[in-house]
Image 1 (tube, rainbow, N blue to C red):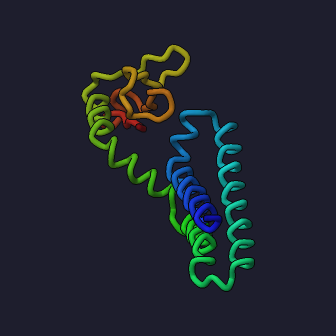
Image 2: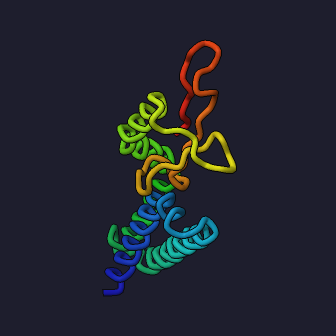
Length: 159
């Protein structure tokens, strides 16, 4: 029964680690970056505890065969995956693909002149409607250039 407890704890800690790393940028959005870092540190501490517990379990029950080393293998695999999988790149790729159509729509509206700078303290910022999910930093975009520059090209939107 004790072996099952070590295995369950190792699986839960490992899954919590991988989920926290996969969702770390959402976590930064939900709470502040100042709280996200201690939360991730706490998750790593749980995984370290799982590693130590499973290592002790494997040494004490080394005669038990594969079952004794299974919690250790789960924890080590999770840590290896945490270092090998590029979670930030995956998150950026998914975010780009999820919001691409909305961002292209906003850029088209800027090029058409439907969206103009509307922030009093910065003539390059456009505040979008709430919950447009285009900009991850407060629904504002920045435009560069004049309405029409000397070559007749429209301004560029930095979404």
